[in-house]
Length: 321
Image 1 (cartoon, rainbow, N blue to C red):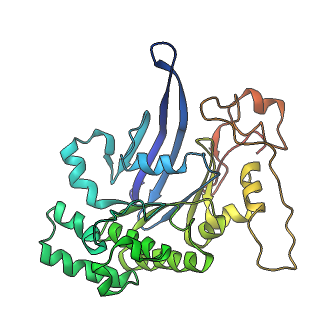
Image 2: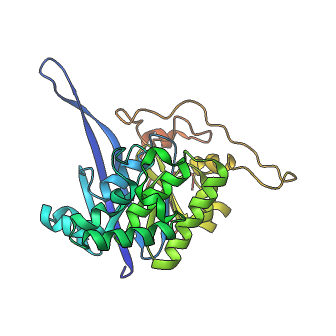
């Protein structure tokens, strides 16, 4: 696919479980377990799922902030895990991350202007004077004031700190940004402002996003493609309109049933899943969702469903489809 900016193939990220008398490896936490997807240039790809489904781990692994266990990650056609440390450093300005908690990601003793411009200086892309001017430009783009440059993180509201995090990510003019739950801790009115900011930045520069969220209302507004994760596995993926109009996997149907409907005359049947998400250290056999699926059949417990295209770029992994 010539316009693919990021291509992920059978990605696995396991964390070892140590135990026993000698502290040896006794198992693995399978945070990401064989996930594949492609993100085209200028596209916003949404990853949704419950907490613990592996969304953030995927985001960090495709940026090579967390090492993979198996699989491949190609960025602009280059094998990201085949690069040396120096080669990866040269590529870093093209790939940026917006953290879920902007306050903990900022140095409380560093002025925000210095924090935003730090990467420009570290990568040798600007002098201190040039970086200062560039930071002021980016602050304005992100809806902040020039005098915010000399303030400290604790002097800002949650929404303003998130804007600072976005400014720090885009100042290098990246091709690709991973936004990890960037609006989950914000009030609804502030969420709308931040989502609109992401849209405006994409229109300005054509940046590509991997947008990680558990809020399907936000994902519906911002994303063009959506992937649904359950216990480290992609269970469904489709263009946004197709997924919301025709969800095929029972897990996706349950997630969408919880999305509020703005029209009070429209009633949607709520699907309540029983039980908790199983442990990724000991996932169920067969389809991982069968322990909570209201439609589960015997085959679901015995066989892993094939992840296949059912038409129009709509992929699903379910024995019932």
